[in-house]
Length: 269
Image (tube, rainbow, N blue to C red; front, side, top):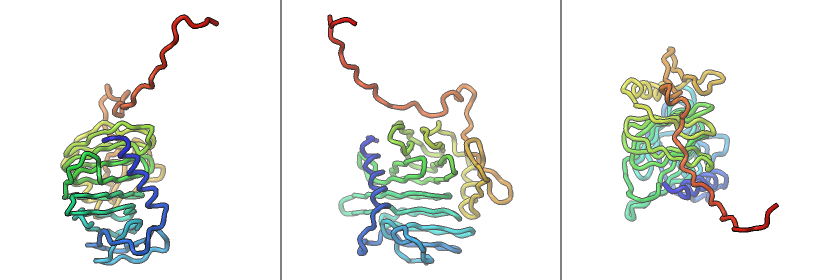
C-alpha cells in the first residue's frame, strides 16, 4: 500500500479524535449486543453514558467495556466489531456509500482485545479501512481478525482474508502482508515480526478470551505472556528459530537517498 495512503488515513484519525464533530453527525453504527457495564463516550468526552442495544454511534465516539462486560457494534457497511471485557475503541471516522461502492473507515484501539469482521470487499487500490493501535496500523481488505494490545506491542491474528500490517511510525515504512491463519506482533517502535501460524488451539484461546477478558501482569513486555483467569496463557512473543533471532522483523523498504555527482577536476584541499 502506498505510504501516502497510510499517512493520510493516520492524519484522518488524529483530526477526528482531536476536533469535535458537528452535533448533527450521522450515526454510522449501532450496538447489537451489550453485556454488563459498557460506556459510550460521546465525542470521546467524559463522563460516559451507559450503552444499550440499538443505541447509535457517531464518528468521534469511544466505546469502553468494563470488567465482565462485552459490546458489539454493527456498522453501516455491515462490519461487526466486538469488544472483549476491559477494552476501549474509538470510531474516528466511518462513512459508506453502497451505490458508489465507497467506504472510508478509521478505528483506533486503546486497550484490550477486539474481534473485527469486515464482510464487504471494496475493490480499490488504496486501503479504505484502517485500524490503528499504539504500535501498529492495519490496512483491511475484507477479512476477519483479532487485535490484542499489550503495553509494549500489538498482536494481530488473522482468521481469513488479508491484512497489511505495519508500524504506526512513518519512519518504519515496511509493510507485512498477513495471510489467512497467520499472526504477527508489532513491538513499540519496531516493524512487524515474521508471521507465524494461527493454530486451532490459539484461535480457541482467543475466542475464550473474548468472553472472559485478558489479564495483563504488571510490567508485561516483550517475551511475556498474557494470561486468562485460571492460569491459561496465550503466547505473544513470536517463536523464532535460532537463525531468525538476528532478524526478528521484516526488512525495511527504504529507498537510498540520491547521491549528488562530484565535479571532476575540482580544486583540492
